[in-house]
Length: 141
Length: 185
Image (cartoon, rainbow over all chains, first blue to last red; front, side):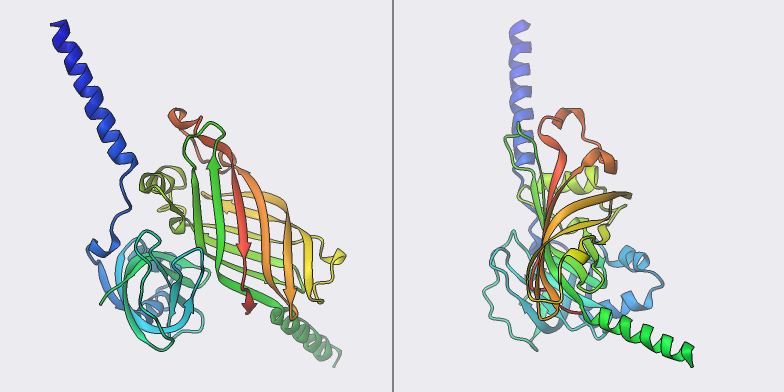
C-alpha cells in the first residue's frame, strides 16, 4: 500500500512539474494563426475613434481584438532594437494608426515603401494620446 | 484697445510655446522588477510610448498602454496584464509634469542638458508624485531626445505581489524612459 502511494506521489510530482514547466516555457501565441475578429481599413478605424463619443467606448469595441487592417503607408519606422513598424494613413489629423511588427515573429522581409497599400494582422491595444496602436503585427499576403 | 493688444500678446506667446513642443510616438519605456534572488529576469519593454515636451514651458506628458509591454516569457506577460497591472481595467499609465529646473538651463540653445523633472505618475489607477533627474538634447529650438530613470514602489500603486513569488519580484520596479527622434508637433 505504502509503495503504491509512493509511486502515485512520484507520478503526481512528475506530472505537476511537467505541466508547470510547459506553462512557464509556453511561447507567445502565434498571431498569424489567431482568428481575425474584425476586418477594417485604417481610415475606418480612425474614423470610428473620432465618431464614438469617448475613447473608452471605441476601445471597448476594438481593444484586445485581432484586426485585419488595410491601409496606405505614410511612414516606415525602423529601429535596430525592434522589428520596427508602419504608420498607416488615418485620414484624420488628430489620429494616427501605428502598426508595430510582432517582436516574437520573424522580422518581415518585405521592403516597404511610403504610399504602398498593405494588409497586416495584429492586436489592437487601443488609443494612447491620439495614437491608435496595433501591436504584434504580421504581414498578410 | 489695451485688451486687444493683451489678447494678441497672449495668443502669440501661446503660439511660440506651441511651436516649441516636440512629440514622439515611438519612445521606449523599460520596466525591470527583477529581485536580487530571482533566477529569471522580470523585464519588459514598450516601444510605443507617446510623449510631448515643450522646451519653452518645460511641460511634459507621457502616455503608455499597459498591453504594449512585452516580456520574453508569455506567462510573465499574461500575469503582468491580468494579475498585476490589470490592463483591462487600467489600460494606460501616464505621467504629467514638467522640467522644474527650467530657469537653470537655456533650452533655446542647442546642446545636452541635465534637468530635474517632477510630476504625477498614474499607474494601476493610482496617482503619485514622482521626482527624478533627466537628460535632454535640444536641437533647432526643440527637445529632440530625453532620458530619465526612476524607481517606483509597486505597493504604492496598489500592485500586490503574492507571497509565493515575493522573493522573485522586486518591491521597487526600475523604469527607464528613452524618448528619441522627437519631432516638432
